[in-house]
Length: 294
View (cartoon, rainbow, N blue to C red):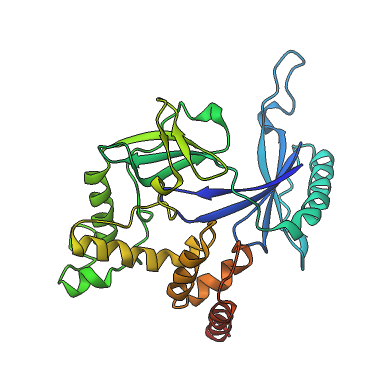
């Protein structure tokens, strides 16, 4: 049984914490509510003939939290409910043992980056824990937000009379981010990262230093002042989720100040921050979130 973390990418929407046993896994993005998934034979194979090979997959079984225990159980009567409940009970036992270790270390050390003409990483587009999956190319276009998300508004672009809804798109500012990355980073490559932060490209022998990989998953240095301001606005908007990443303390301190203005997201995710440099700021955000939600 193991506990580990992986990033949710393209777009970056946070970090998932996982606890696994041989027959089940638990997943959370906030450290409070866990989704329990149990491995079982697919329903169409439950009454298969003796010579037919079984196909197994993870099925959502229930939700679990330390306060409520297990709830919202999805019990499909044509499946082996006894075996699934046993696997879920064993998973909960393992999960409770792992809770004091939260947040777990990132395990998705194989990373797929959009790179500039020199081969230097610009935007992180995908990752995996398993080297077997690096031959498959994920999306080749970096996304700043989901296509349904139009909440990101750049103050820098708005001041320059560039509206976020420009009749062509209700997320024009996010689309501008994506276009800038596309122009700067025309190629994508897989890298394997090492414990010291360095990494090497898997299709060549080229090795890169830790400083070559943007710690926030996106390059923040741009030649055009307006574009650089646009990316600064994006980092500020994303700051409560970026704090879920392992970061240097000075960078974390800057993000905590930016995240103070996003109290609800801070309150939802602070339990999974690997470190907190300014606890007073985080506590202020939590108090504000409680007041707004009361």
